[in-house]
Length: 87
Image (cartoon, rainbow, N blue to C red; front, side, top):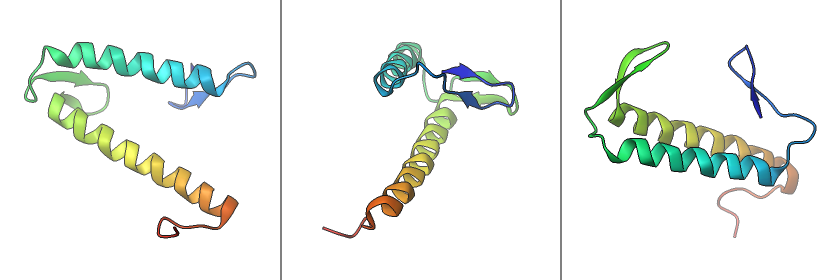
Protein backbone atom coordinates (compact mmCIF):
# COMPACT_ATOMS: atom_id res chain seq x y z
CA UNK A 1 0.00 0.00 0.00
CA UNK A 2 1.13 3.53 -0.68
CA UNK A 3 0.27 6.76 1.08
CA UNK A 4 -2.08 8.95 -0.96
CA UNK A 5 -1.70 12.75 -1.01
CA UNK A 6 -5.28 13.10 0.29
CA UNK A 7 -4.10 11.45 3.55
CA UNK A 8 -5.60 8.12 2.51
CA UNK A 9 -4.18 4.91 1.12
CA UNK A 10 -3.96 3.42 -2.35
CA UNK A 11 -4.08 -0.35 -2.69
CA UNK A 12 -2.09 -1.33 -5.76
CA UNK A 13 -3.12 -4.07 -8.18
CA UNK A 14 -0.48 -6.49 -6.83
CA UNK A 15 -1.46 -6.00 -3.20
CA UNK A 16 -2.56 -9.14 -1.35
CA UNK A 17 -4.35 -9.65 1.94
CA UNK A 18 -1.28 -11.51 3.19
CA UNK A 19 0.93 -8.55 2.25
CA UNK A 20 -1.32 -6.09 4.07
CA UNK A 21 -1.33 -8.30 7.17
CA UNK A 22 2.47 -8.61 7.02
CA UNK A 23 2.78 -4.81 6.73
CA UNK A 24 0.43 -4.38 9.71
CA UNK A 25 2.38 -6.85 11.85
CA UNK A 26 5.67 -5.19 10.93
CA UNK A 27 4.28 -1.76 11.86
CA UNK A 28 2.95 -3.16 15.16
CA UNK A 29 6.40 -4.57 15.96
CA UNK A 30 8.08 -1.24 15.22
CA UNK A 31 5.51 0.57 17.36
CA UNK A 32 6.07 -1.80 20.27
CA UNK A 33 9.84 -1.26 20.07
CA UNK A 34 9.45 2.52 20.14
CA UNK A 35 6.86 2.52 22.94
CA UNK A 36 8.80 0.08 25.12
CA UNK A 37 11.19 2.82 26.23
CA UNK A 38 8.52 5.44 26.93
CA UNK A 39 6.00 6.31 29.63
CA UNK A 40 2.36 7.21 29.01
CA UNK A 41 3.23 10.86 29.68
CA UNK A 42 6.05 11.06 27.10
CA UNK A 43 5.10 13.22 24.13
CA UNK A 44 5.83 13.40 20.41
CA UNK A 45 4.85 15.88 17.69
CA UNK A 46 1.65 15.25 15.76
CA UNK A 47 1.29 16.97 12.35
CA UNK A 48 -2.17 18.40 13.12
CA UNK A 49 -2.52 18.34 16.90
CA UNK A 50 0.79 19.63 18.19
CA UNK A 51 2.34 17.50 20.92
CA UNK A 52 0.50 14.36 22.04
CA UNK A 53 1.31 11.85 24.78
CA UNK A 54 1.83 8.13 24.34
CA UNK A 55 -1.30 7.67 26.43
CA UNK A 56 -3.23 9.78 23.91
CA UNK A 57 -1.81 7.67 21.06
CA UNK A 58 -2.96 4.45 22.75
CA UNK A 59 -6.49 5.78 23.29
CA UNK A 60 -6.62 7.10 19.71
CA UNK A 61 -5.55 3.71 18.32
CA UNK A 62 -8.20 1.92 20.41
CA UNK A 63 -10.84 4.34 19.04
CA UNK A 64 -9.65 3.88 15.45
CA UNK A 65 -9.56 0.09 15.77
CA UNK A 66 -13.09 0.05 17.20
CA UNK A 67 -14.36 2.39 14.47
CA UNK A 68 -12.92 0.29 11.66
CA UNK A 69 -14.02 -2.98 13.26
CA UNK A 70 -17.52 -1.48 13.30
CA UNK A 71 -17.25 -0.68 9.59
CA UNK A 72 -16.26 -4.26 8.84
CA UNK A 73 -19.12 -5.53 11.01
CA UNK A 74 -21.58 -3.47 8.95
CA UNK A 75 -20.20 -4.95 5.73
CA UNK A 76 -20.43 -8.48 7.15
CA UNK A 77 -24.04 -7.87 8.20
CA UNK A 78 -24.86 -6.72 4.67
CA UNK A 79 -23.32 -9.89 3.27
CA UNK A 80 -24.78 -12.55 5.56
CA UNK A 81 -27.60 -10.77 7.40
CA UNK A 82 -26.48 -11.81 10.86
CA UNK A 83 -25.88 -9.30 13.61
CA UNK A 84 -23.49 -9.25 16.56
CA UNK A 85 -26.23 -10.82 18.69
CA UNK A 86 -26.90 -13.77 16.36
CA UNK A 87 -25.51 -17.11 17.55
